[in-house]
Image 1 (tube, rainbow, N blue to C red):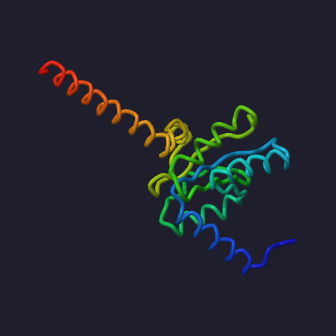
Image 2 (cartoon, helix red, strand yellow; image 1 turned 30 degrees about the vertical axis):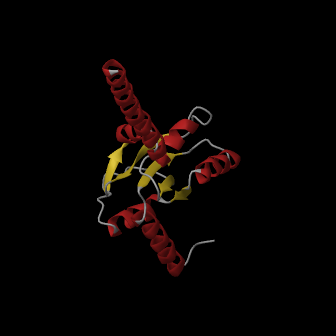
Image 3 (cartoon, rainbow, N blue to C red; image 1 turned 90 degrees about the horizontal axis):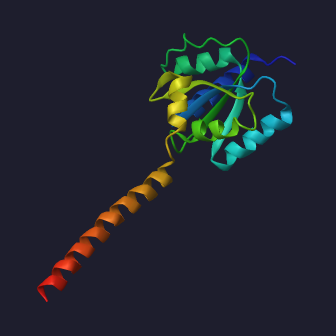
Length: 162
């Protein structure tokens, strides 16, 4: 059943708001996947607070245009799946890239970063960046190593003076 103009406007508003609040957005192709596989992808992304929605390209272009993002480089010939993360820039890309092994039909086509369209190469680079929590853990480990070295040095100086 065809959507009414009011339903289309509501969908456009919903998608525009979702993209406006997003920190990380990834566009994927999903052709060849079963509905069960797509549901599993959604479930895995939901665990990381990432939404995954199939959107018509014309609707996506209108939403991007409303946000001031030039969408003329989008060259899709059918619906596209959009993963949106509101918390972290790299989460959507990282989780989707991790699922490609089990779902080779997922193709990371591009996305949005800093209110600009990016290509698949940049999405793959974003996917290789650890999460904020992992980066903080690494930073704490590195800093604690420096503090530990300082304490060993100070103890050695103290022992030498005694």
